[in-house]
Length: 197
Image (tube, rainbow, N blue to C red; front, side):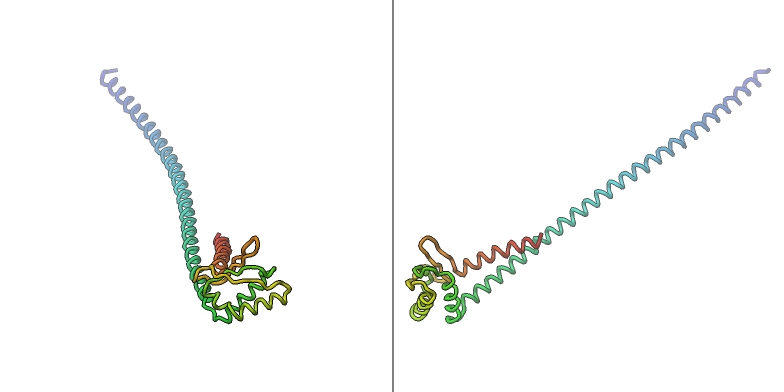
């Protein structure tokens, strides 16, 4: 065999070997790309799932925060409305006509006086209204109820205060309008807060 034939034979074998190596490399490259794509898809799905979960959590937190803020605003509004309602009720109660006001005070006194020796602490304005016929009528009603009629008025409350404080031997019963509205406000604020939860 001539040298040229040997060279052609070597060249043909080298070409076949190069072709085979190239085909194997292409096949292996396709496998690597396929596996890389599959892995990329898995990573992509995982990231999308995580982002979806985070988005749901953020949305839930935002909804909760928004609802909480709205409840707070509603509570502030209800408190403001309650304040206005209490001011108006106290204003109306404090501006009752003399006869109506004294009738209310008398009923309250009759339900709270038990010995007839209590001191009725009132404002100077109420003392003016109560002296005379009112106190006589009160003492008469107390006597008919079986108590002594020694109750006495004492103008020790502030000029703007309405209602009375009934001072007994060892205790005081605060029936002033400001105290009444304060206790009502406490009860109603608890109720409003409970309803907003």
